[in-house]
Length: 330
Image (cartoon, rainbow, N blue to C red):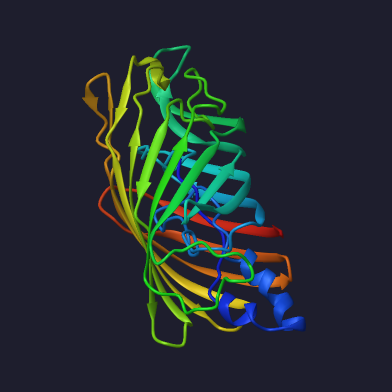
């Protein structure tokens, strides 16, 4: 399961070295920079997902996501001819630290949600395939993520962070999703995935211009999936090909408290094979959206995002609305 991240440090440097009210705004901007895993559609994990923050503080981020699509709850499997709605509630905990002189960061995200919709399945009474309405509420698979700075990402605490303009940054990102969520192969729709997934990424930050107001964020990544030996529908095994995704965010700082982003992502792969028969559900689509972030308090920030699938070659549909509140604990 892929989890998007929250908010943004675009204006962090200028605020850090201010004083009084201006310096108070720093903490709000800092919270807006936190990386918060959360389910994403084709538009990707979201702006600010891989930006650096000062080492030391913890950030806690309650998140709500509303999704309408023809994909499973995790947005990892395309389900042909399905119409599915999902509500997700997550709380992410984020911490950055110095690991042997390198910048490092961890995320821990428990999830709870509800999924409902219409999907083709086997009628238990007649054994025939027909369109069935189903729903389920429960715990999702948690997500544990780690990032290590490779280029341009030296660890800095609150007193050091922002003293120099941001340069090109490159990191190594790893995220694991264990099978701890609610899953029952007898249910057509599930909150848990019934198998592990492991994602590797190389997130990059490219400053555009010398005024440090415009940034290009690029997040290429690939996700690998464990076989599911107890899939839905009475099958024996379901395999899934790796899923490649690259997302782009053009982020602009309007003021010390307000920023916006144009979001665009492409993903391909992830076809499933059930009992050695291909399911003809490979992903191949573009998604895009808009995001806005605002610091409402020195230690509290908000982000809202809207996204949808823009162009597809796989009959995928999807629309998402996401709201996050980030709270900083220094």
